[in-house]
Image (cartoon, rainbow over the protein chains, first blue to last red):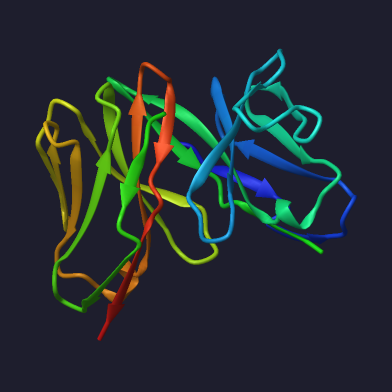
Length: 116
Length: 111
């Protein structure tokens, strides 16, 4: 398994500002992901955070809005830039861990972001 | 694209069994997962089933998979108030290398 922590756990931000969310894992993992969970919605994959190279973004998400860093195999950051109220969501970091024949995906506790 | 659907809400009495249903569209799904999200918390992996299995039991949890109909269910026996949460079904496909989540089913357990 993997233990994942995120900082901050929650924040209230003003429109037009940026927030950087940190994700720390207790073991080295190859695959790290960032998801968004809008109020009352399911999870949507924002991007795969690649170590040593640029993140791979899903359709509808761009690097200018959600820059991601992955300096090593245990840490990643997601920045939500130039925020608007529509960015109010829970942002979750996730890692994939090999468990023999299959892979398990574990999630952090999430960062609850409210944009005013 | 791939889609995973669930009913939005389920209400059961404490001690009864709960059955949460899920349907998916991706026939190349190899693993199917159930996650639990308690209020204000992240997602907790409850159990999984491989696509060549039709049933998996883990203590109070029973997962049934009908691959022909692309239907997955999670049965919780002797449901407790602590089981109240949102349950997400998720499908993993090696074709897309992505985990696709359902809309979540909010389970409410009343005494």
